Image (cartoon, rainbow, N blue to C red):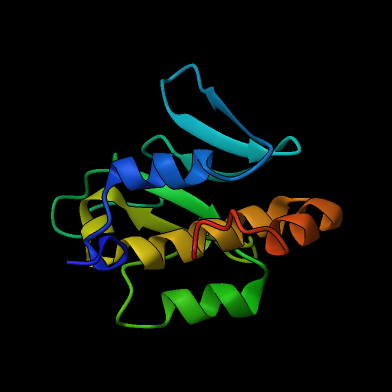
Length: 142
C-alpha cells in the first residue's frame, strides 16, 4: 500500500507538523503538545473540556486535536462532509478551527491528514513564509 494512502496515526500528526518549516513545538503544563509557526498555534492537543463529550456517557473527550483552517468556508467543508471525522462545538462557533478525536484519526489517510495540517500551517504562517513554502519542493503533501 502507498504510504500516503495508509491510515493516518497520531505519530503522523507529530511528524507532519514538525516537517513544516519554522515550526516550533511546546508542551503545555498539562503535557499537551502545541505546534506553532511565527508564534501562532496551528495544531494542538487540547485538554478535556465540557463542550466535547461522549453523547452516551457524558464524559469529556480526552483525545481532541484542534487544527486551524483558512476560514468559515473551509471549516464548514470539513465538518459538514460526512466522509470526514472532523467536528466542531458551540465553543468554537466563529473560530477558524476544526476538531478531531485521535480515536478517529485512522479514518483519514496520511495524505488527507497532511493536507489538513498543511492548510492549518498556511492559515497561521506569514504570507511570505506561506509563499516560500508553496514554491518549495519540501511540501508535506507531495
